[in-house]
Length: 223
Image 1 (spheres, one colour):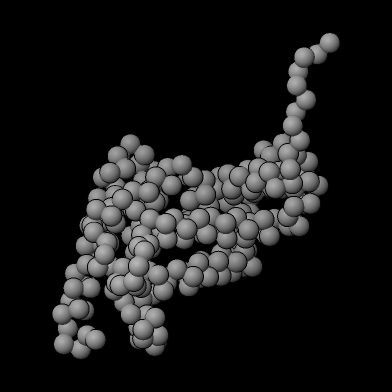
Image 2: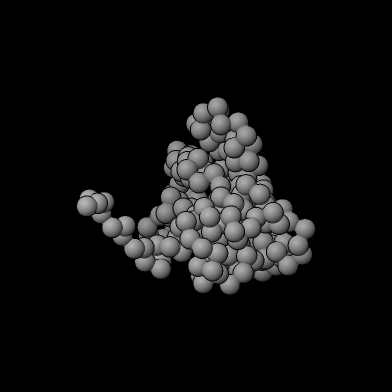
């Protein structure tokens, strides 16, 4: 008589999470075009029809993963950099606090390498999928931009004009480009200690924002 315990049946949400995790690995490893629903099903331990029960197409699954992982990014920044109370967030944050947040960001990369490769390295020749990627990136930026602008001392909420928004978007692009570039480089150089990467990120990003914010506050035209 077998003494093996019966395998516990997964809930629909648990199975969906397993599929998403497997799909992230497949998309990161092969890119969108070469990723197959068959391999995603195999890695998930389910049949292909079960994958389609949860996601009606490869494109929908891909977009869902982009949205999920960018949402995780936004949540990380808000948790690590938000301060209670009112006032200028930038004035309340020390360089040490920013370094701690950057450290959490790069730690997330260490523990979610497939997600990061999918977000920042995946390329595809399919116009519709590239458009999905662009739309998700822009939506994620727009969701975080007011918080980010306040963080670096740009009065986007107080002066929501075109010039201020452009200033905020340029600052965002500087931060995004620096952190993303370092992250991708670090994925290829895992022997470099995380602390060194964090220090480079702080020097490249935060130090510059501090100087810019100080200049803005000392300007005669500042409110």
